[in-house]
Image (tube, rainbow, N blue to C red; front, top):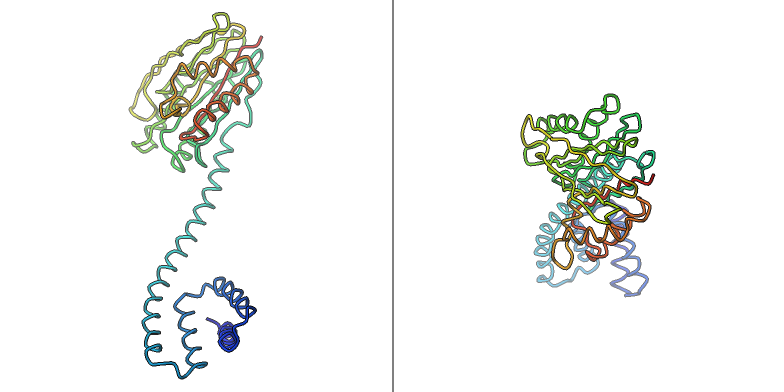
Length: 334
């Protein structure tokens, strides 16, 4: 404790002992703030308090003076715990700062908005359950009216998931220069994940190419939640066929190509498993319930539709988001 602080403490304590006025207590409160700012340990404050009492009240009974030694020993242990807590708080603040940076970096990995595609509306919404998300989506320009569309779910959360997301993103960046078929994309990403990601982490994905000239969607899946196709003429849904192992489990995996063709008003709905695994009244959301929610909003513009679907799910789960949720709608409008 510095000399100025000692003198001020002694002056305030002596003044209060001789005249217990409220303004002396207010002065003690202000001094307490200064002591905290100076990071003075509790046992130091107690030790100086005792030495000040011995000066101001030299005739204290022996038993009281002896009790001071006991009090100091107690406060030494308290002071050590205080130091440990202070160190933990400082470390927590450092980690919070690092996570803030990681969150901002992760947000830059996602496209600002879907690119325009002739005759097609694309809406997408991705919401993290916590500060960092394990869901990812991307768009790749294949040229000649074709657009690559990816949606992925990293099995895991936090910074490890964010690192995997960045690896997937930069692996996909090369596709702008050399567009590949959906099976080729997944095979390439599987090789990257299998070599570079811990065996406890897996990545599911659907990658497809939408040809706006023929309104045909060719796609391949790697263990991802099956999407839906809405057929406007029948006013009904079909499940997208899925076949293929999650990324990173094994080498040399084949990912069969599937395709669907959209008529006017038809739509493809893709989503992460955070959507189907959300709980309503203690039970997992049934697929039929999800279809009904989508059906109620499918006539809206695609972006408004995904926002309305998410909001309905959020309300049904009583505003308790347990897992990241990503919803994408690709709708033929011309």
